[in-house]
Length: 268
Image (cartoon, rainbow, N blue to C red; front, side):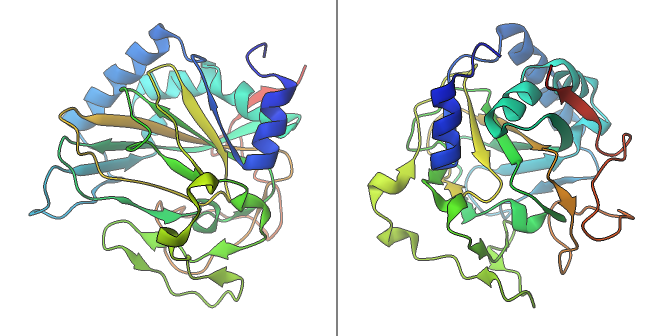
């Protein structure tokens, strides 16, 4: 893609995250907004209200939207995001893994706890890419924030359930307790002022989190996760969120089921 330069790829590989400006057209944004309204009007079986009943505002999430809402399915299959993931990771093929919708109503205090994405997923690999797409203007103080270079430390942090902010116990010795983020140097934290059409691409092992939504407008964001050719199935302990049920793969085998994880992009 002409939007992805060599310096973009270098920055993504070095920092584990990059903000790309105006790579999603207005037509795609309108389609995603329409799909979002459908999801809110009739939530699916994989939706959760992450905030408590007495919390200010409200924090809504839903996974696997492409399975039931055609606007999201069309965006994943035909939009520019798979090619972005493929070029940033220098892979020859990109498969779609899953999606998630994250909506914080005005005045929401519930934060998105610091976490890495990949420990939640039954996969290993260095080419797992998450692309976060805001559908509203977002100031850097409310934007997704990523710890620069955290994907290169070799550390896997204990997953956290957003609903109760609890670390999930694991028998895997490589899982560590998330450090005290209040002591993290501000120079190591990446966040951006963003407009609709922008997106953040980040590595599956990048440590990240987000504040609540103290503004007077709704904050809508779509997250899509993509798999490069080195991604392999690997069992994770416990039931995580989202729950990947009934995946019948041998350990360390490729996730090549076209129905479950469709091949969306190939390098020409």
